[in-house]
Structures are given as C-alpha cells and as structure tokens.
Image 1 (cartoon, rainbow, N blue to C red):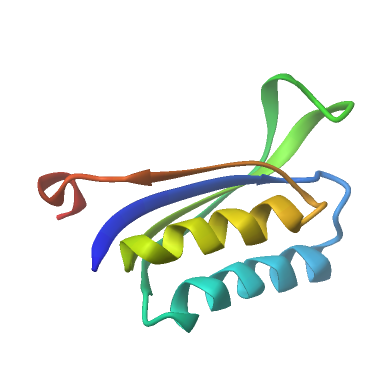
Image 2 (cartoon, one colour; image 1 turned 45 degrees about the horizontal axis):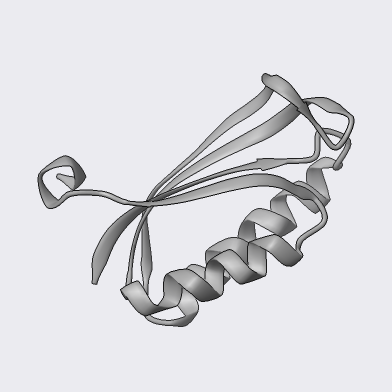
Length: 99
C-alpha cells in the first residue's frame, strides 16, 4: 500500500445530494480494492485560475488515501468517465510527508 493525494474539482452546478453521492462513489472506488481514506477535506466552491468547460468556479475536494499502486490507473479511468468531474490530480506522496 502506498500513500496518495487525490484532488478533484466538481462542476459547481451540482446539487448537494448529487455532490455527496459522487464523493461517496469515489470513496467506494478507493476502498473497493482494499484501500482506505486517511483524510477527506471538502474545500468548497472556489474560483479557478482559468476556465474549464466554460466554468470559472468549481467544488474542490482533497483526499489523502492509501491504496495499491496498480489501482491508481483504474481510479483515473473512472474519474475521466465522470462528466461532473472537471479536473483531478492523483499524486504519489513520500512516506515522510504522509505522516
């Protein structure tokens, strides 16, 4: 198991119910392969540095997760298929920073 940071930006027009459901779905993808979420931070709606798909704002979510390295590709594939996810970034973090 390795430590990762996953940050994603969700479409700002998504209602609260759909936003929570999307977050639960993404958490389910992480835990499906035996991974776990160490920390979940919803940063809320923020102005983006540049326009993405004609949107200037987005709901930011940041996760610190542990998972198998081979499952990172599957999570990226699933996030690309979600129309409501504008952008995402999955980064492997060093062991010292994870603590």
